[in-house]
Amino acid sequence: MTAESKGGTLLIEGGHPLRGSVHVSGSKNATLGAMAAALLVPDDCVLENVPQIGDVEQMARVLRSLGAAVQWQDAHQLRINASDLHDSSPPTELVGNLRGSFLVMGALLARLGEAACSPPGGDVIGQRPIDVHLNGLAALGADVSQQGDKFVASAARLTGATFFADYPSVLGTQNMMLAGVTAEGTTTVVNAAAEPEVQGLAGILNAMGGRISGAGTHTITIDGVRELRGTRYRIIPDRLEVGTYAIAGAISQGEVTVRGGCLEHLTSFLSKMRETGVELHEEDGALCVEGAAALKSISLQALPYPGLATDLQAPMAALLTQAHGVSYVHERVFDNRLLYVSELRKMGAEVVTTGTTTAIISGPTPLVGASVRALDVRAGAALILAALAARGRTEISDIYHVDRGYERIDEKLSNMGAVIERR
Ligand code: EPU
Image 1 (cartoon, rainbow, N blue to C red):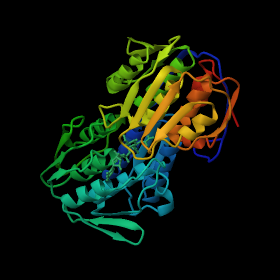
Image 2: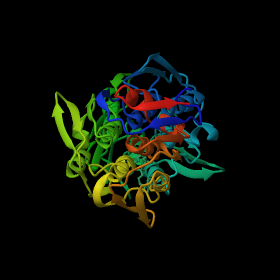
Image 3: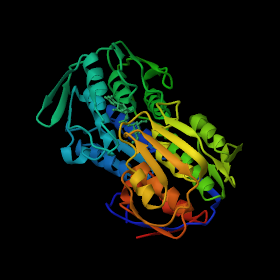
């Protein structure tokens, strides 16, 4: 099965402590931004350290539908050439299941003076408005309207402006950077997202000749340049993979070394992991994880960066089912990202939710194998983690969700001793 086919099941026999090391892939979300950036120039852009995952394949389809050539040069190197862009509007069925596809709005508007895109799909994790994106493009002087099922933006030439984002939206900030990088004058995004993936986009845009400063803080300044050029750019490591494999080591009571990550991007995660009693140390840039005999319960809040990533909220909840005492998990970014709780309960977890944003977990509970379903990429990862700690066999269906964001997760886990089979 390829990373992009729907369905797929993983069978995991729990109770085997993981031992060994794992190398993290390039960041999914940083790759999607870099792919959109390649639309800004008629030259070749070569992206290195690109993960082979479903969402990258889907974004490649979106780019091809616009006329860009997207080719794998080797297992992790993608060449994109947008010299022949013939369309400013990707088909609805292609953008419908990939949130990151909405980044083509900013890039196409800057390159072609027009863009039209239906509301992007993505995981079912709560309301996902796009007001920040649309208001931001309008602030740069674009005419923005809704026509049929598409949002349409057009501008002969974008003009820099100061824009206050109501929420520090990651993709909203990235759309502003893609649109503002060649606008006339200076754009300032106030209350910008500070996530490492935003820093990654600034990295490629500056390598292309852009002049963006402040990425990684909540104020980003974009001095518009007349022209950009193609580049070769290495995608940053996936911080969410680092977190997921670190939890895999801890929850299986194993000893795991996670290599190739950027631990600077994980300060909040490492701090919360230490609070649970998991032994962590850094060795030559790698993260060494040792499961503790008795984990401690904690409270955590998923927040915009540098807070704990919402994408690690469900994986952390899986770990906390093994902690002594009552843990509180507050999701503060999305308003409905606890749907995985019902699947965890099928495995014996004692979790109650209050509203749609707080989970209260009592532990430790012995987890048992069950038939469960991956509801989205991170919910699926959380079930895989729970399965590693469960007695007996867990069958996780719809594993394509996990394959959208994690490269060969079954192989990586099995190399460390997990008993895992794909069907
Ligand atoms: N929001 C608004 N207005 C907007 C946009 C967002 O109010 O115009 C609110 C949303 O309602 C939500 C919050 O902002 O409550 C966060 O949304 P954000 O826009 O920051 O998320 P996103 O950009 O759509 C990206 C990642 C997500 C990740 C979030 C938060 C990509 C492709 N997706 O989504 O990744 O959870 O940032 O860090 O970059 C994943 O990889 O599993 C994933 C879902």
